[in-house]
Image (tube, rainbow, N blue to C red; front, top):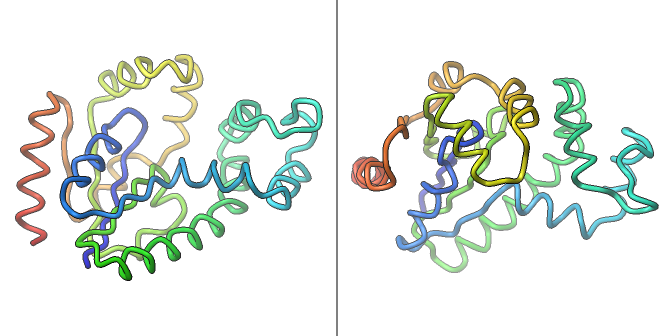
Length: 195
């Protein structure tokens, strides 16, 4: 089984690329979604985060994920603190998912994670694919999702490790400035090289 990490800064198209693997006997693990799901279920983990960031991330007595995101992505220090709490848990989830994937004889194990390098998790994979795109295009894509406003998107962009740094540590780079069909062509080329 081949392990692949797919990463890219906000709006790059990494999740679109990850989904292309679904038709290829792939166990797909979306780190952001799984981390959020895990956090929602674990009160001890929530308590740790509340102890660090205080009541400003609460809605009544409940952890407010929107408020947490605002605080966590305010600056590099807060982001590092949150990553330090959440990523050890995420790495355990990834390892458990990998065991499951091996047991069920998947051909590929793909992790879609924006913060792969930030969490120092790049050593885990046989290959890392970086998806990148021009800033203007990434901004447009992120705005289309309607999950964050422009200032929030720009804040997150500013906190992410630059593509230039990520390129040096990636096995494959996809410049995703065009259409989905172009992305699909790049995906097929990379797949042939990996096989």
